[in-house]
Length: 87
Image (cartoon, rainbow, N blue to C red; front, top):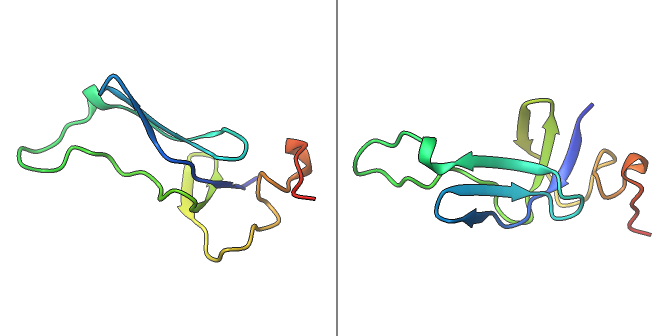
């Protein structure tokens, strides 16, 4: 079952760990141990993250940017399983 999240800004701790969560429910969208990422010399070592505010759909291990600006029916912010509502 897929769930759409709202990407919050990523946070880096001690120049080693990077995490990006959903701004609404707090689920982890991206998590890196920066010491374990191989980067060719001369390339930017910053791993990819979702733009802040992007709608990100997660289904198992797959995730993708969702189209549109309206929250879809499967959004964590309106999903009855998260016990949250915009009303």
